[in-house]
Amino acid sequence: MVKVTVLCVGKLKEEYWRNACAEYFKRIKRFANFSVIEVDEEKLPDNPSPAQINNTILREGKRIISKIPSGSVTVAMCIEGKPYSSEELAKSIYNTAAHDSGNTVFIIGGSYGLSDEVKKLAKIKMSMSKMTFPHQLARVMLCEQIYRAFQINNGGKYHK
Image (cartoon, rainbow, N blue to C red; front, top):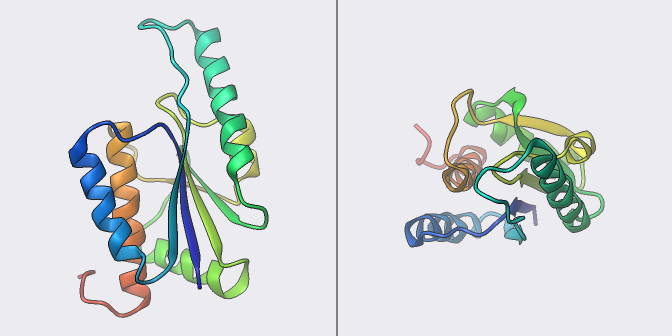
């Protein structure tokens, strides 16, 4: 069975974000072995210095790297990545299942982004949009798009 993981920094704080992700989690589980791995978010002061931000990104990056399953196809969710359509995402997941390990790991960094080390390890760099979204909404949007990708790949009616 295909395995898809969302590896992210921090927890979903508001119940409505948790409920939305739980709904997509339930839907995706029909198609794949789906999991979400959360790594601890660094605590920063209200007005962090550039050095504090950089150290935070590096520490969170090390936590992320330690949780990436070996042999997986990694997708770094980052602003400089390529924007994918829903159909392109579906094709990417299909290709990973058919030609690679069958294990895709989508990585969402903290509020200041991903470390260069994490980005260098990624096979794919993907952007959701040129727009900025709340960090927690990005996780919900990614889960929805993963579900949509499985619907596309399985001829479901969800994607119109």
